[in-house]
Length: 176
Figure (tube, rainbow, N blue to C red):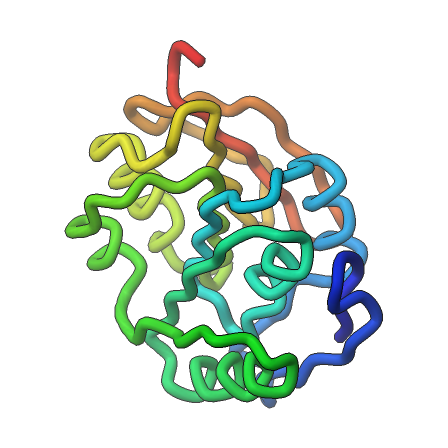
């Protein structure tokens, strides 16, 4: 696994051992950031961060990132990757839903990559919509296995793309 673009381009990252954690593939990350074209200083939340690769990619391209993961093994690998690159960041060890339910911060991009079999991503999207956690023009990106079905209160699907096994669904606040 490596960083695709920005100041850390081509730098290698450690991955979490085992099959429980599935990192976002290089090609998927490259496509994601080509679509997002986030400006320098954008507030980026990498929820369910695993190795931290997506949030680190955002930092590499000039964003300010926050990281969440409730899995201790993942959090340690992400923090090893931060240290390897000289990034002053920490992983907040909590469930994404819990953080989203209490934060007052708004984000330009919220990236959700929960375990595919869990309902955590949909619940996190509901909280994002209910609490209005996207900044003006902000986007929530949900990585999952199947095309998105259903509705999320206060959010609308703005785009959806498949990359191998992964589907990226993009949500914006309704009315934007």
